[in-house]
Length: 224
Length: 224
DNA sequence: ACAAAAGTGTTGTATATACACCCATGA
DNA sequence: TCATGGGTGTATATACAACACTTTTGT
Image (cartoon, rainbow over all chains, first blue to last red; front, side):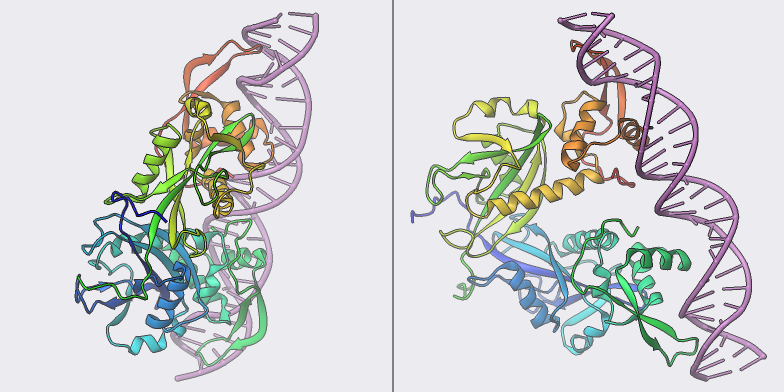
């Protein structure tokens, strides 16, 4: 192999992961507090450097396991941010991912020091260009939800139609009509009723549904 | 700065650009023949290494200027391919872009040695993972066209409605009804008629239209 | 006059939207 | 018995899909 010409960039690569969840009718994101320079004590997206012989998708899963304590969640490559000025340490590009995690899977990480799960709306002033990455992820996630079944990854295995509707309302940012929503979602054929009900609330028990597929599928007709 | 721990990847970064054009009712792609190892003499997507202090988007424009001889064309980041086995020379990740160029802007590059503009359908056996990148680009381009005005970037400034319809037919892969297409496209309000006609053909001259905006815009309602 | 593409409306069908009441449970 | 969310149908408006003939030019 020839020596590298000196106009070529010396690059390091990282992965940052935008972990979304929905809770209290609010879209939230997982953040970690940095414990070293640069941006020490700032909040940032969870991330890390790419290891030798590792794909960024594997690195993203590693970050999800180590920092968010979750496995088997939906994650997808988002965009690569590579402005040479984005990191003061040098030319460090980041392959950003986003992941969707049901709130009930984030119990253990809530207890960890130096992590926060906070409303996306109230999030700004993150380290590096992470505000920009977060904004980009929100946009992508919104459109994804409109033509795929990814909502499954924000809900427990069994869920009520109202819970599913809440997911869509939070992400769309406006309420939708209950009857029309149910008609639409049932006509898509992506979920099916179980024979179980959610009891123990102070109102009529709701029938529990499940997604037919727990893997990412794009729909022919859009949901919204 | 500390020394780099040895489990971190030594990375180089490249950009590869999928340059699409439409000609003879066919979707075509610009390819270059490699003149060095690995994959010497194989066709590949035009691309190159990232320079110091350069963003991948700038590198993509540089590639477009140097290899495709075009400027001011639509280009957009596609996806980052980073399987450590994708390049035998080492851990080389590529930030792929796709660009849309009207056929009439590719005149000079046609004459160049070692370049080819060929039908996407008939393209396979490219160097590295470029078949995969090309497939990914085709898919993305199809969906983009459905909810944006990017068709402008595949046509000359002035064009007939039949030419525009051809763009959609080629990318959708099936013919569409002329009257319905015109109704739809006019109702979107993204193009407007000029007072010029395209004469010199052996049939009735067609009114020429232009896009209101020559910059990428996402539409509220999808075209298809 | 002929060939070839340009241009133009209507109708039926399917989809989306708007809207209000009764039901089952826990407290 | 009351409060709370669960569950259900219809009528109207809008969007989509199918379809054929006349016009203008070049040869």
